[in-house]
Image 1 (tube, rainbow, N blue to C red):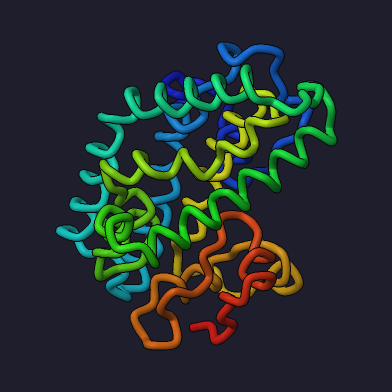
Image 2 (image 1 turned 30 degrees about the vertical axis):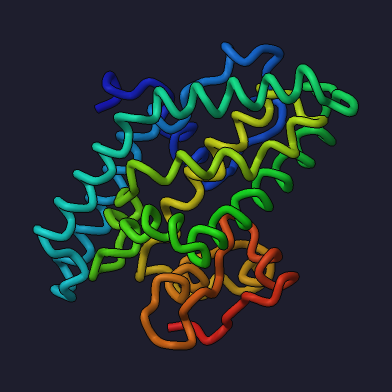
Length: 251
């Protein structure tokens, strides 16, 4: 197992929870940024198998073979066009940054790192909200919501087409955020959203006021009327609080 991992186990697990420091995730050049998502595959499956073991022990039916295979297959197929679309996204971001930047923040500043963290998360919030409220974007995003189960395998059920619209929402950051810092937070923001697709973690206490948690995201995936178009957050639930989309009726 260890020999198959491209990064130390504890490092890979920390990445899934955004538990990283600015110093270890700041780079002077785009080509130095690790492929965080690609390196996280083994860690996804470690947690999926752990959750599956808990479900099997409890016999609670939270995993069904067919649904889980569909989710994992969708996740695999969604990776195929990413080489192309990531190139478009990065080239577009770098072009805007090169030609239209108002100023350039230093890549090795903690202030830059935290500002990018907030900017990427807010960009994701608005992309996600549009993906639910604009018909042609929902046509792609609905793949993620097509599962009848809610578990960690569901997190992998992604659309092939979704990435063709998401990158536009981050272009304003190119006016001042260096591309290499932007890429880091783009990847870590998505990785964070993996572990919140579980029913086994209930309330996280005071963290519920700040972070997007499993209880918040269960509402987002709910099909009750009060759940529809609520809790769009990626990492921070503060955006839903600010923009009036927070639903606190948890289940």
